[in-house]
Image (cartoon, rainbow, N blue to C red):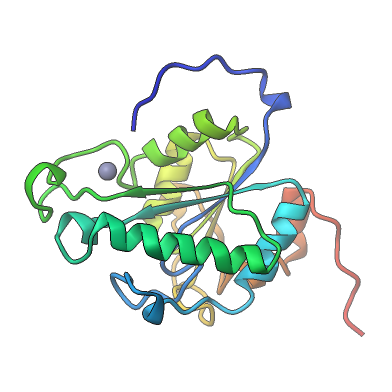
Length: 211
Ligand SMILES: [Zn+2]
C-alpha cells in the first residue's frame, strides 16, 4: 500500500472524493461476489454516481476482498470483474477514478496474505493511498458504506462526511454507527442523494420539489 512520499498542494487545490464501498453499496451483497453473473447493481447507483461526478467528486471504490486471501477467488477474477464494473459505469457516463482493494485477512487468509495490514477496513490505508494517488481533499470528501468498519476507516482517514447505507438498496440500516461518527442512514446511494440535508452538506443543488 505504501508508495513514495508525495508533496501535497494545499487542500484547496485538491479534489473531493466520494468513496464507495463495493458490496452492499454498488452491488447487492450476496457474499463474496466474484463473478459477473452474481454482480447485481443496487438500483439507482449509476445515476447517483453520475450526479456526484458531475458535482466534481472523484469516485473511488474501496473494498475489502478477503475472499482473495481465503482462496475463494483470485486477483485475476477480481480484476476481470472490476474491469467489467468500470465498463458498466462508463456506459452510464461515469468515470471511476480509482478502485482499491484489500486481499488480506488477519486470521483466515492463506500464506502471505494472512497478516494484519494497513488496508483492510476499518484501517484507513486504502483511502489514504487514494488521497496520495489522486490528490484528494479528504475533509471535504464523503464515504458511503454499509458497515461500521467503512465509517471507522473514513473517520480514521479524516473523511468529513460519513453515510451508512443498507446492504440491498431497499432497507435503511437498523442502527447508525454513532461510535464511528456516522449518524446518517439511508437505504441506498440514490436514497441518500434525495435527502435535502445531505445535498446541502455536499454542496449539491437542491432538487425541485416533486409535483
Ligand atoms: Zn490489506
